[in-house]
Length: 213
Image 1 (cartoon, helix red, strand yellow):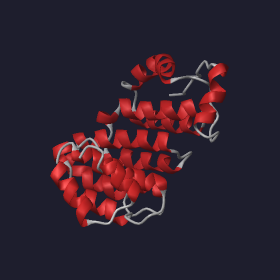
Image 2 (cartoon, rainbow, N blue to C red; image 1 turned 120 degrees about the vertical axis):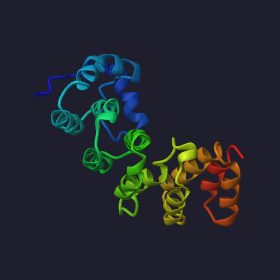
Image 3 (tube, rainbow, N blue to C red; image 1 turned 30 degrees about the vertical axis):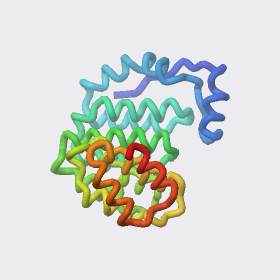
Image 4 (cartoon, rainbow, N blue to C red; image 1 turned 135 degrees about the vertical axis):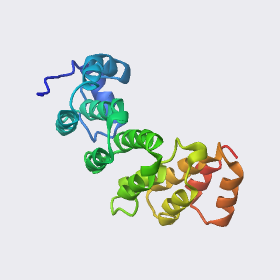
């Protein structure tokens, strides 16, 4: 199925949006509410189309220059998360290292996190797609994969991901470590306190991880 879709942008917003993202990407100038309103018919249609065509749509959108199309591609993946199988998740892995920045990486991570909620038996396999990668954005996904898991958090997996990057001098990795600890502290603050005492973590990770303790 051919993709015939174009956003109607707002040039007045484009420069400010690009500046906010450090001018890494071009923008049409659509803020999230308007982007979602314009893409609503496409998202609705995606729920009934075959998955091979949908994957191709996502790839095509991701290849476009303007950042809003990457957001739309992720929205399509997220909208259909309950339809995906592990092979689809493995396919989507490629986009973590394409046009990478925190906005896209964390949005993909959210979709992967929803997937493992529906497929707990595949959590390890999804984790293994990203853990130990040479690419720090992929490792950020591994660290934060379980943000929404609460009591279903696999602590062995979380500990492994954190300690593998314990001394990594990368802001987005240390921020991810702190984020994962802070989120889990809502479920088990005692475990997080013990973890922070037992391991020498960066100042940033400790600051972020102990926010709710």
